[in-house]
Length: 117
Length: 110
Image (tube, rainbow over all chains, first blue to last red; front, side, top):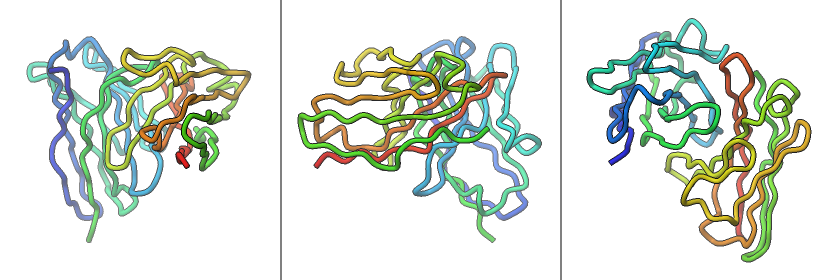
């Protein structure tokens, strides 16, 4: 079954870091880019960045430059998104999505990250 | 990178058509034929409905169509059905391996 399965919900304190995983199955992990998108409660979608699992190349939205790191472990077909220096405004559902500029056709189920003192 | 502009809401009766606009600039929507549209139901992950301006992924009904003119892309849903009630987001390639989403439109089926 072709799917992306993300790690479970996280609760973090302000200033901490969070690392969300996204495990791919049913397709060749290194053949498609992985993008990360977040959505605060009741708000719109926000693109954070992308990673090419084959080359390890990455690209980040300017807003997250310096705070986000996207990595992968090809041996277990898993992508990771780490966000540091968390603040309350980072409370959101974080999604991984497969694809490139031609569209993201496969999405993870989402991971809720709550930042609270 | 500013978000693309969409109307907050749109509505139509069953069987009617609704069109959602997505306005950007020559650096994103107007500069590339890489506009996608996503449907999102409450509590669910987004679903790709249109890619590369007007192409439909397998399984998406042909009631959904996309187009672009200048810096504005559009999604039209014809023959509205109750299950089309959802939030819709456009996205566009913005050069330099960057992407940007629209502000989102809530479609209501009256």
